[in-house]
Amino acid sequence: MTSPVLDEIQAALATVNDPEIRRPITELGMVESVEVDDTGRVAVTVLLTVSGCPLKDTITNDVNTAVGKVAGVSAVDLTLGVMTAEQRSGLQETLRGGQAQREIPFARPGSLTKVYAIASGKGGVGKSSVTVNMAVAMANQGLRVGIVDADIYGHSVPAMLGVGDIRPTQVEDMIMPVPVGVSGAGVLSVISIGMLKPRRDQVVAWRGPMLDRALVQMLSDVYWGDIDALFLDLPPGTGDIAISLGQHLPNAEVLVVTTPQEAAAEVAERAGTMASMMHQRVIGVVENMSFLPCPHCGPEHRLEVFGAGGGARVASTLSTRFGYDVRVLAEIPLDLELRSGGDTGRPIVETAPDSPAAIELTRMATALSGRGRGLVGMQLGLSPAGRL
Ligand SMILES: Nc1ncnc2c1ncn2[C@@H]1O[C@H](COP(=O)(O)OP(=O)(O)O)[C@@H](O)[C@H]1O
Ligand SMILES: [Mg+2]
Ligand SMILES: [Zn+2]
Image (tube, rainbow, N blue to C red; front, side, top):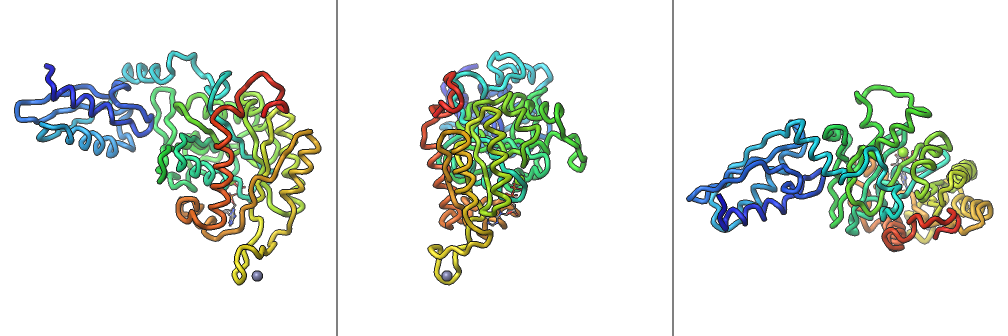
């Protein structure tokens, strides 16, 4: 049966995105049937990718709202079903776009996704805090952003974003990244190495080949869709993951996070050098916990709690070593709200966007994304140092 109302209902359904895949449910084969009777009562059956889909309430609301708005519709009866194995394979094929299996989309020549690897010499310097806040800042600017939390020692990124308890949805052997709500126009999703463990409390000694497989899985088995930027929160140090990353994503650009301290600066230099040996370009240094804004005089008076000069020192050492200009991109002050935001899952760029730390993080995100999507890191067959 087709009627003008039915066409309009179809059009309304096409505006509803699956919250994880972020594409219209009509395109994904999720709308099984639509019927409308003489009184304007609509019966819609929507198939979820998996039973117990954590986002079924979102889909329910979105379908009811979209269809309810169509003129002539008096009521909406929504039935939720679950895809069969065959339907899920079909969906997986649609999502892969006919591509060969286990391909890393970001490593394809001509990929427009900017890949930022956040590295540090040691833990506790604020690598994850910088990662989540930059990612949220970019999403708030309207970009589509993904985060891969590859820190085997910490994997704290999901908790910092308030999605620490969520397990990703799996469609056959494809994994949906966990969506994160942001206040701006863009979108953000995250996958963490901690989510790949069969059980949350399991202790896994990630090393060598296993770690490599996990990294490849997070890059190729996860459906990222068409994103503008991908952030990788790397484990601290210069270990196996840097080697894997160099092999799988040579176009990743590295940000080195350090504190002003002498010892931290030294280990950060080693992490930077390692990245370069793996043919990744180090695009800058972030000095975190740079200073404490003086509670009496204001931020012009910087109390140097952790010493001074670490960021500048790493930048100048790496510049000399690589023969290209590595700069300090940001000096992020100590901020209590930044720390508590990490604990409560609400990043400071959302909760206190006018604080000096949030302003500095947002400024850096704007500077990086402002370089133009894809133009900077695109693989042009140049040597890493020649890429700009
Ligand atoms: N600029 C800052 N001001 C205050 N606390 C911070 C700042 N940066 C990080 N922290 C806190 O320091 C701790 C370590 O930060 P985290 O981002 O987890 O570091 P890493 O990922 O390098 O181990 C966290 O409790 C975090 O909230
Ligand atoms: Mg961390
Ligand atoms: Zn002062």
